[in-house]
Amino acid sequence: MDVYYGYTYGTAAWTAIQAVPLMLSPTMMVTMLSPEVREATTLEVYFSRSLGFSILTLGILAVLLTGSVPLSSRLTEAGGTTTDPSDPKAPYALPTLSITLFWHTTEAFYCYGMYTQTGIFPFVLGAAISASFSAVGLWCILFASSDGRISRKTGADKRTSGFPFKNNNAASERKKASKKGL
Image (cartoon, rainbow, N blue to C red; front, side, top):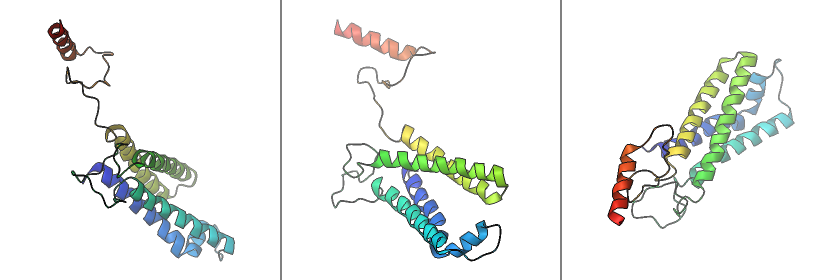
């Protein structure tokens, strides 16, 4: 399985794991979070279920908008999904990856902050899972979002720099190419 698909489906699964308890038993969630045992108010139940629906929607949209599930009946010859903006199957792949990366990162920092304040172990678990999704999402944005820019003359990636080390191989290829042109 591609890392891109793993991130997309993992995000959907993680959001579903968080959303289902909020939607099915908001009273239990309020009881677990409240310092005193009491019945949840109608407003707390409403906000809990609304948050659950919102989180689940985020997971579903992450799967649909990143192109993991084709939304059209036309398939490409390769059959693969890429984050290439010209790919008709995934026009919103990179923006969706960016938004879910931001969400995972924010959630990881929030869970870590709550752990340092309260010392409750599930916050560490949430922070670790969200931080790992953040790392994978960042990797997908950095390395899985384009095919690179390979020079036809030298065969080297055009986005690389010579600082602080000199690329002697590319420099020699450039000299050969310039001598052929003379």
